[in-house]
Each structure stands twice: as structure tokens, then as C-alpha cells.
Length: 172
Image (cartoon, rainbow, N blue to C red):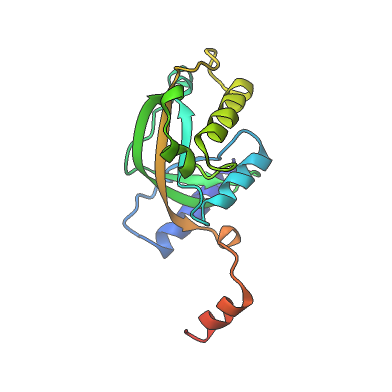
């Protein structure tokens, strides 16, 4: 992560969007465990496809990290560690892995958005990338987080057709 870029991004967002935000940038992080995965998941956010994410409570506990709270802002990084978006946490629920529901699976926007797909992908992910020495278990506590997008960077904004662009330029 480029801390100077994060600070500059936050300063720009405060200046352009909301000067009442605190001067200190919120926590910055990327989705996934690889640069490619981070970019792939980030691209789903401005499209409105990805409005949720999940992490294991064990990783927060074992890493000594503070769990998010409702209303908290986060800066989302791309795969190269550059800031691209700001999200606000809107809901949190801790449930065992095997009790995560289909609504949450759908909110994550991955694969075919089914619960079966979510479980298969997340079990594989946590078996391969978990930072907790406890690894993976069917009943491990999962933090299901819902969020709203506040500010995307232009590079990550949804692509519009030429017709829509022309309409916007004409004020239609």
C-alpha cells in the first residue's frame, strides 16, 4: 500500500465530496488475496454487483485487528495497492460459515452468486489464504459485511455506451 497515495486520495475526496470528514484517512485494504483477485472484485463495486464481503472473525482475533463497525468508512485499494474507492459499512452479522445465507452470498457478487458457489469459493479461499493458525472449519465465525459505495475513482466507474455519454454531454 502506498500510504502517500492513500493520504492524497483521502484529501481529494474530503475536498471534493465532504469537508466535514476527519483529516485522518480511514483504514485502507483490498478485496481478496492476490492483485488479480483484488482488481476483479473491486471492478464489481461501482457496477453495484458487489455490496458485501466476508472475513473470518478468527483472522481479526489472531491478528489483533479491530473488527469493522456499522458506519465505518474504508478506502478500497486495487491490486497494485492504489486507492480507488471509499465504502461505508452498513450492516454486520457474525454467523458460522455453514449458516451464511443466500442473500449474503448474492451480495458478494462473485461467480453465479449462489450460496453453493459462495461456499465452495470461500472454503477454497480460506483454506489457501487464511492468516489464522486455526485455518478453516465449517462452523468458524464469519463476519458478513454489507456496504455502500460512496466514491469511486473515475478509472473504476462503470463504462457507459457512447450514446449515454453523448446524452450526458447534451444535458439529457
